[in-house]
Image (cartoon, rainbow, N blue to C red; front, side, top):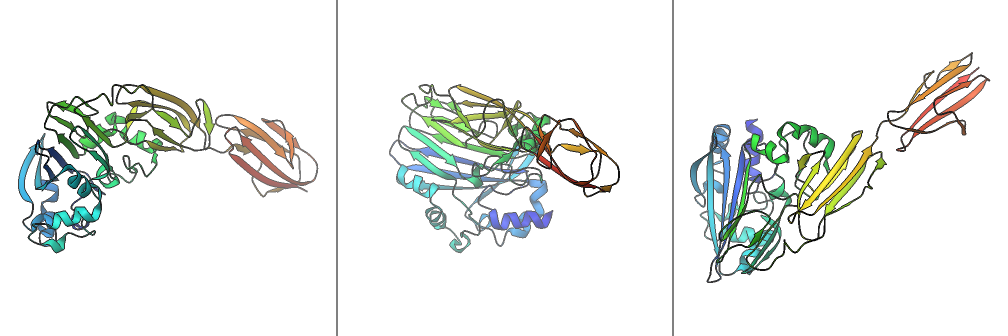
Amino acid sequence: MKKKLSCLLLTLVLVVGALTGCMGSNTALVLNADGTCVYTVKYMYEKETFQTTLDEAKDKSPLFCGDFAKAEETVGDMTYYTFSRQLTFASADAMKTALTDLTAYINRMKEGSVNPSLYTTEFIASTPFSEVTLDGTTFIATLTGASGSMTSSMSSNMTKLTDNTSYADIGAVSKKLYSNGSIYGYLKSCGFLMDYSITFPTNVTESNGTISGTTASWSTDTIPSDSKLIAVTSGNLLTSDTEAPVISGVKNNGLYRNAKLTVTDNVNVKTVTVNGVVIGNTKLKASASKTYKITAADANGNVSCVSFRVDSTKPVIKGIKNGKKVTKPVTLRFKDNYKMKSVTINGKKVNNKKATVKKAGRYVVKAKDAAGNVTKLVFRIV
């Protein structure tokens, strides 16, 4: 465990990526009235778990070269080591470039560093955001896979839930999250924290996060399913939205062997739930045999729902084993966990429940269910 944590610190120390819980980050942006901007990032490592690892990494990590201010912070019943650094920018455009372009981000981190050589792509795997719209009145930012993948290695059963380049297996995820009620509850139970904020010179009027005067903020509890953060100080970007999210890839009441679906919205996908459990992703796949109900809501409360069934279980053929030779008639019985579509023996359709073969010969039996799963069996009567 210690070796694994040490590797994480040495290779992913400046991003929130493939982590095993007990840590987090805090990212704060400030737009000043004179046009200048401030970016502050704080990385958090649970003290008891990471003490040994931090000591081992201190000579190799940028966190320990003097660029980051080290402190301790207690959140709930956990105490964290925190490492903070603040960067100032002459304009919103300059900050936007640094936070979305990896080369620019690394170069900006090198400026004023005690040891600039430590800042490489080995240590900084990605920028905080993949896309940013930023001016005096509008902030729209999409978290990168590394910043947004809050759960990427918390469990061997978990896939990247908020990295929207990947499809989350909602069967496994729902089972894992069920006792916590949501992905957010699961993350908090693991001690994982993730906070973002943007502060304008004037009051925030709309946001898909939490508004407090001139600041909009997002936490582990409120990061949208599409990882898009929105805050404005004028206009009605969110409240003017009357279009519900679109759930594509499956049809309502459809039946599939496996399914992949994508949730999109013209402005923002706030939440996606699967059978009542909040999932932090907009790209989902389902392979476990069961019925799924997907509900997607945007930041203005517009909602879309779709229900479908996945049947990945093949039909069962009883009466003889595959490859067997017998000298007497064979009675075959066919069964499916959901709905049988057809059964053929040597290409000819027979009863979907039962068939008897008496004559000598080679027989190829195929049973196909409504979802397209097929079972094949071959036998001989001699």
